[in-house]
Image (cartoon, rainbow, N blue to C red; front, top):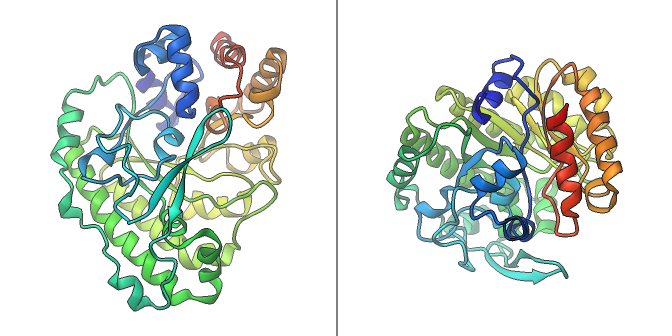
Length: 364
């Protein structure tokens, strides 16, 4: 089977010839692996580890300024190529970023929140919001024309509260959900209207060649939910349903990303949004134990990731990694699973541990 055929087997409720694999990493570790292993591009790196990695067609490069928050392409996997505007300090939302060094690499963090001082919905409406007409969707179509169909394609995304926090400031954004609902509705309304039309045009340009789209919101922290279920249902759920429905009209499957302890949201995500893949599985967080997830949702969704990158992959031994991969394989043996790190591989991760993860699952 080709990598795409393995993914599609799972999405169609069937069993592939082996457990599919995927890849998520920071740019630093990807560059390190490519350099150390003599891999000139991502396809060569995928083949080196026998990874069934998806190809992310990054819509960033179809406009004059970046659309995607800086972490997103690596969080999804690997973009087909860097965006033309990847080094721009300011995105289309007016958010300015700067590089923050953390010792072994750098993250682009927000340096300016353009809506930090907004006091009313009118202030929100006066902001210079991007226009979908300013993006050249023919560039996506041309990229897809040259795509080798052996890999599954992901294109399009929707993660509005992430952008909201960048535009407003994280603390103020969470306060808005409880204290300033009119401002929250105004910002989220602008974001939804933009992305619904933006993704519709992406999907039209794709002409049936897009397999997956990314609907997301980080709903869980390390120890519990980041918001109540009631707040999620009030502000985020209705538009997530609409965005997933849009994708389904184009026969595009839904991969959903939420970090951390997000257990209370899963029934709504599965039964109402209709997600098909859940990423990541941070099984050390409360409520996210693998056995319980399989019991409650194993018949309905595909689990994506689940090999712990906060402890096992980063700081464990090769034997620790092998043991965890085998344990996870056994727990997920009666459901559908795509093996990979539970989030981005970090620069502190030894290459030997990465080898161990992929070799162990491919030998099973």
